[in-house]
Length: 282
Image 1 (cartoon, rainbow, N blue to C red):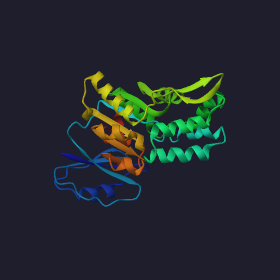
Image 2 (cartoon, rainbow, N blue to C red):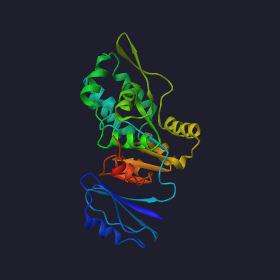
Image 3 (cartoon, one colour):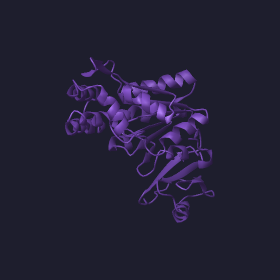
């Protein structure tokens, strides 16, 4: 059994569902999970579903569909911005830093070198800028808290693993409800950034290591994991997870992911697992 899962931000119409079901061999009756999510089980070959503006169509196998571990990137995934770019704005360097960030997310630059280069530009920035940045620039993406709290409530482990900085992940993890978080540590001396990041740098390999370590700790397999991210730094954990989700992502990640979400909010990760809105927690 395979499920076609249709998700969107603005809603999935009955007409779209009827049309999609007609393209499936051996389709079961559609099941509406929410106004913005519908699943259709079927047993035939995977069809080529014609794209519909504003909708995401993804195929998910029935086997091992409900996951036991959520591991998520933070910047541009759980939150809508890149923290280092916003922090750079307080130093008047946002354009320069954002260009490096974009190239790193596309996989054009080595992540460790890119983070060193960007943080060095912030040397001397008052540490109060960190708090101001968080309070003025950082918020959760739509559906983030519902996703995390619902998975917590269903007994899953939830982990925020970021190539960003612990100053922000510590706060975002609490706000969203993640059970644990990992990120890089900015060095601060005399109430100012030194321009250095404490070693080791948490990059794509470390994200995969976190996934594997959490699986071992909980006695589960990589197939029991749903991982979500948006950039090249997330590539290894997305490839390893039983369900790797590219969320509003760069091309390099989309091509490697099991699921691509361009138009949906983060509650779509619940729909992909067959979890209906009636079971959402917040």
